[in-house]
Every structure is written in C-alpha cells, then in structure tokens.
Length: 297
Image (cartoon, rainbow, N blue to C red; front, side, top):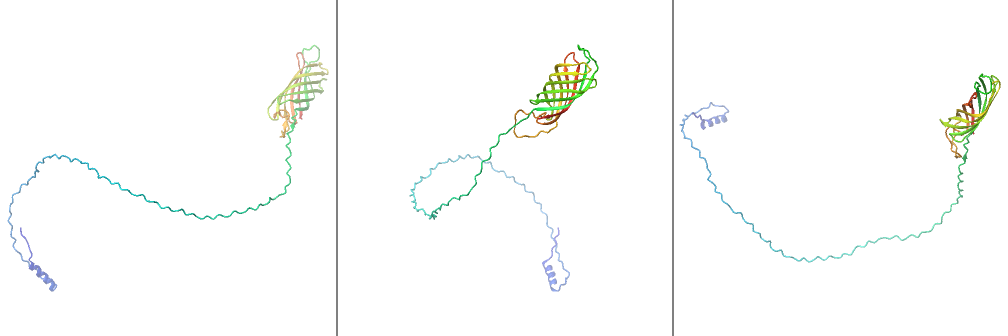
C-alpha cells in the first residue's frame, strides 16, 4: 500500500500566497515514498471458556426471635382543671304595658221580622178517572138461514144504525162496558135492537193504543119481514182503541194505579170493533161492525 501525504510546508506556502495577493500559485507537491509495511501473520489466540467453581450449599440456621418486654409505663397524675364560673348574661326585654280596653256599645240594627215560609201543601189527589163514553156508527148483517123452530125467509139482510157505549177502565188490563145498538135503516124490512153488559180485558200496545175484548150478557131483538129473533144470551167481540190526546204531566198523586199506557188520562179517542150479538145454537147469525169516537174523563 502507498500512503500519500502533503507536507506542512506546502500548506503554509499555499495559505501565504492566498493572503499576500489573492493569487493562487501553483501548488508544489512533495511526495515521499511510502514504505510498504510488511505483513505479519499472527496466530489466532484460542478463546478461554470460563467455568465457575462449584458452589457448596451451606445450611444457615434461622435466627430465633427473642421477645423483648416493653419498658413499664409510669403513670403520671394530671390534676383536673378547675372550670371558671361565668354568670349568664341577662338580656333586658321591654314589655309593653297592657292597653286598657274601652267597651264599645253594640250597634243595634233595626230589622223587620221575616215571616215564616208558608206551609207546603200536601199533594192533592189526581183523579185518574177511567170513565169513558163513546158514540159511533154500526152496520149489521142478519142471516136467518138456520134450523129454527119458527119459519121465515132465508134472505140475508144488511142494515145500519148507531152504537153507543159507556164504560170504566179499572186499570190498564181490565174494565167493564155497557153498550147498545139500534139499526134504523133497513134494506129488507128488518131492524136490530141490542143492549148488553160486558167484561172488557185489555192489552196496551203503546202509550196511546190498546186492544180489547168483549164478553158478556146481552138482549137482542129483530123486527121486520125476516125471521123474528128475541134472545137473551151470550155475546162477544174484539176491537182496538186509540187515544188522540197527548199525556200531560200533573203535580200530585193519583188516587189509583195509573196505567200510563192505553192512556185513560183524558181526551178524545177513536175505536173500532166487531161484535157477535147472539152466540147460541140453532140461532141466526147476527154480526155488527162498529166505529166511532170516545171521550175519556
């Protein structure tokens, strides 16, 4: 190997030239022969391995704890501290002297005596009268064709006349009625006279209407060219009546159980019914249809 080195003198000369004039003289290099070092071969050193010496186990007996009693404590007597008595502070409280009350005379107000309220009158009885009357037209059909002991024509007669009735409804389910029928217009020379009294069962179907039946005892008599009839026997019928007046509230109490249906309170109404005047074996058929007006009291 060759080593190249620059002498110190060359470096100083270069630096002085730079300082003197600012010109750069050509550097002069001094070279020295580099002595080639001889290579020495050194044999490698064998690395030593450290082997620690064996350690012997030594049993060490543990130290025993020795109890050392604490030194005795000397009792020191401490005298109690005497408390100093401090008297309480009394606060002065101002008490207002009592005020003498002067009696005030009562004020007398003149009042007028209030009269006691008038006694409440007892509710009066309301007469829910079941009495009624009626008047209307009646048409009769007389068929004398029967096996009767007396002879006569078998021609059917139709007549017309009037019907009147008067009755009393005991309650909304039962009443009594008397009625009479007389036909004055005759087509074949016959006329009918009928009067009877009936039991009248009723069934209300609304507040203003009810249906009724008739069953009772009657006397019936016919006059004219046809077969004569003069009988006292059973008669029956059925019909309907409708009240045309409106119910009105009343203050009081009813003197009987008021029905509230079929309205027998009072006012006008209408009726229509059918009646069999004679119900007897070996008797002619005598039927009527009646319509009319009724007034309830």
